[in-house]
Image (cartoon, rainbow, N blue to C red; front, side, top):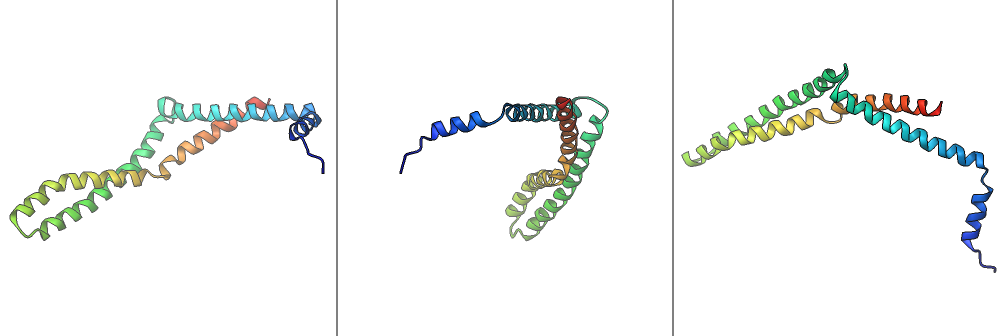
Length: 140
């Protein structure tokens, strides 16, 4: 059985690809690159300027605020329960001192959950619009 030299086989295969196909792939790559750059610029500009800056920040702040309140309340309930279950005065005072830290951590976790994926939907939409704009502009 003859041994196949893959390098020459691949070279022949690349020579057999018409130049038009190579140009089409190159143009498509350039269009994708232009779309990604345009989408990223659109997301950055939504935070740094433009009319949607306040809306973008407000949409994220609303979710984070709701999560903060909910997380803080849940953590406060846990802290108060720990204070009630403390057997001695020393344990009760230690639980009271830890309450602030517990509530702060609960609020932070709640804010992160409140922001979640839903908070980034406006960013995804902004990126998609910018991508479409850059992609179509590069194709014309």
